Amino acid sequence: MTDDSGPTASPSCDGEAVLSLRDATLRFGERTLWSHLDLDVRAGEFVAILGANGSGKSSLLKAILGQVALSSGTATFLGRPIARGNRRIGYVPQQKLADEGVPLRAQDLVALGVDGHRFGFPLPNRQRRQAVDALIRQVHAQPYRRRPLSLLSGGEQQRLRVAQALAGEPRLLLCDEPLLSLDLAYQATISELVDTSRRANPLGVLFVTHDINPVLSMVDRVLYLAGGQIRVGTPDEVLRSDVLSELYGSRVDVIRTHGRIVVVGTPDDTHPHAGHDHTATGSPAEQRR
Ligand SMILES: Nc1ncnc2c1ncn2[C@@H]1O[C@H](COP(=O)(O)OP(=O)(O)OP(=O)(O)O)[C@@H](O)[C@H]1O
Ligand SMILES: [Mg+2]
Image (cartoon, rainbow, N blue to C red; front, side, top):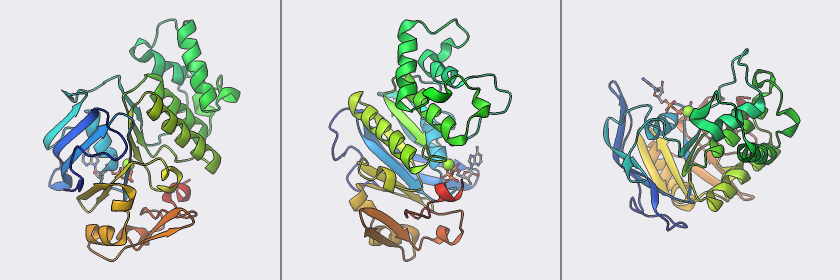
């Protein structure tokens, strides 16, 4: 492991830990995705999760949600062992477009987040309607709030899914590549919404991204996965040529230019659709659109 600053350290947040992982390991069959992860995420803290395709980022979020079991170690949320279906954990899953024929309108998806398990009841009442309206406004979804989900673009759906995840007033927000499909302006809108929410509530944020640049100014710590190994620390501690070269076991260069971070030479960025080159033009999120 990993967390050079110790599992309890956090540079800008001294609130309680909402999430604690201790010596956590995840294996699928013979394959170890990552091991010996110690991590505390505090209320108000923004942690970016970086790493190549298949390094286990989504699986880490699913372990925190209780959807996959840790192979060893422990995970606690608000001091209790992780349980499936916790309403205080907001989740934006890795993008999956709504199936055609799903009879939901845009605003229904957000209302589901507010109502949660009450789906099917004749809601919303005035308070719930106000909560839904505020979230729809925050993601600029007013123009399409009554349209069927299946007719919305990928980016329009993505904005709603972030609104839905925030609707349950979570203490922890897990975002799996939430900027995918968004143009640069909406990348900023969504990043700022998450940033404002985590400070106001406050809530801990785990934010998986292939391009750290849109959120670089917000990130307190980075969790970097590569080849089964993990590094945790501030962006300055982790996004360094020596640290990433050691993590990958080969030469990797981290270049800072015009306030952006470019990672060059990771074994996985030889493939045009893989890797996590934090460049202005070449992020896999943009390539995969
Ligand atoms: N339930 C499962 N059983 C077996 N293998 C799995 C399971 N879930 C995921 N995997 C494998 O674990 C690896 C990590 O998957 P994961 O989705 O966590 O990667 P990721 O880091 O999110 O990648 P990407 O950047 O492509 O989203 C993959 O090789 C995947 O095929
Ligand atoms: Mg993933």
